[in-house]
Image 1 (tube, rainbow, N blue to C red):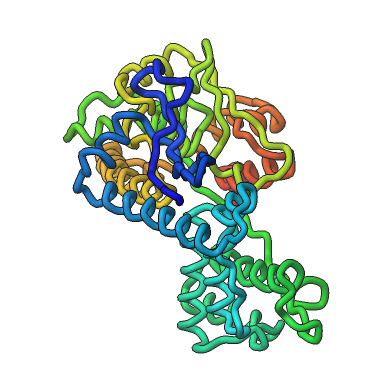
Image 2: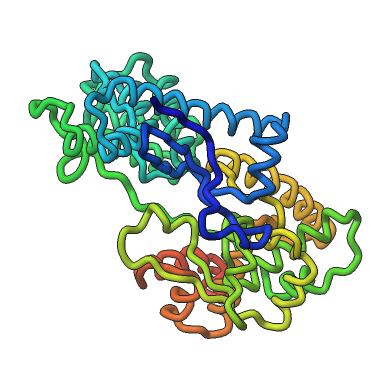
Length: 405
């Protein structure tokens, strides 16, 4: 006899405050054995809204459907597991269905990798899907045998002629190389007779660092001093941009998921989302001093009754939900910043992503050392910082050519 139920595990923490997130589990009652299988995090209020009151919004319905899939998976595992083993049951629950592709069709290999490789973010998965579409447009029914050195050269040349930037071409090329490497060295599906197209003597993927246009000091001051806004969204957009700029030039995605608990005394301490899966070593905490100017913006923008500083996301979000929310909010804020660009007649479009470049440029203009700038930005090493700062040096060209007749 076995029973499976979606369960909020509050054991030992029933007196926790309303914002505390408990483990959302599948509670498996198998004979006299109880197994808790963690599937997420959730507050009591969220659990009641989604699973007790059966909220009918799209996200709640999709979340319940996903949990029902877990229940079905438990039933299937139990029916096939004979004799029953608690440890084996747990292993099978967390094990993904990884049926290898039966062909070397490139689209199929990409789809398998996207579905089954754990250490990539949702945004990266989406980028791999974009690469699939680009490849399908360039060459229908592509197989791994088509991916040769000459193919990669022709592909890059064609994309360049179509107006793709070098960085876009490089990113698609890196995705193709990753798929070839994965099925050559890890899954070992590609035959040993396949001639590897990358590296020495093959197709070389460039390291391209485009020059960036940056705001002038008087333009930064105009943004800071702006008081006359056309809409409330413009003011909110400026304040968010300013907070990113003053907080070591952090990315908006890090501010969106920033929690009040990240404030430790006089500092804001956190890890960049970007480095969570891209680095295995040298993962650094970002430490932002909460200056009076930062405190003023936190007080103005912060939502006190939410565990998240901006209050724009909710506990228990899925990665897909978070990325969708991030994209929608960024678009709205960038619309407000576009209005400010026109209003102040800025030489560079004001966007959320320029806050980081502006922060680094301000430090560089002030004579701060490369090593300290890299530390504040959270770079893994000085080489990354050097490439980054070099891309901001375009304004030096005026100094170089000032004496030309």
